[in-house]
Image 1 (cartoon, rainbow, N blue to C red):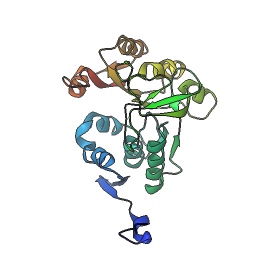
Image 2: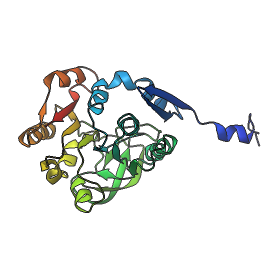
Image 3: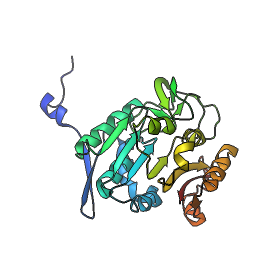
Image 4: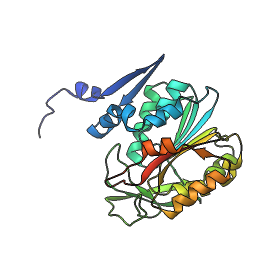
Amino acid sequence: MTAFPISTEEYEKLNPVVTLNHAAATVQYCTPNKLTAWRVNTLFSKEPYTLEWIAEFGGDEVLVDIGANVGMYTVWAARTRGIKVFAFEPESQNYALLNRKILLNGLTEQVRAYCAGLSNETGFSDMYLSELKIGGSCHAVGDPRNFKLEPFETQLVQGCHFTTLDALVAQGTVPVPNHIKIDVDGFEHKVIQGAAATLENRQVKSVLVEVNTNLAEHQDLIVRLTDLGFSVSQEQVASALHTEGVFEGVADHVFRR
């Protein structure tokens, strides 16, 4: 048997945390591996428009974060804006780290995280993981297809529960949100379908959606939100658009009423 190079007490204390200060708020992020550390290091450069969007929120408002991953924006919104957040992340390791961050930042009464996916129907299914890594992404619920809706090789299949935003609102689990963030790696159109009644409510002021402009399903998503009275800034879309590489044509769209 090989002994630990450090004492077990020191080993159990290993829990790297990065602290960010923003105005009067302090936000802490657990970073157990290089990928989660990268997410913190690129927070201000990767999606600056997301932070600008969050900065618009009022303190008495509600955000629903669908596809929260390890909670970068869930925690940021709760700490910097003081809002209530309902976060949904079905991947087991990301969900565990999300909850660690909630506890670390003293947000147990302000943020509620659910280990579930949102779609256009309710039930139990499989979740297809592209890789088993904390902070990983590009997974798929119910159908092993990537953000291009093409079949992909999966490293692990995990059991998963999924439901719709409309069902959660109807049963009182989640109030009608003022803001919704949707980033589910290709299946955003299904989430929109499952939130049809909620999106008709004028209390919903804005929706941030990751859109693959190459997909007809996502083009229809834009039309659907526009018909509901939302508008999007083409300047913002252009600033977010990937113009080359694997994610060419993908851009977060911030829809506002």
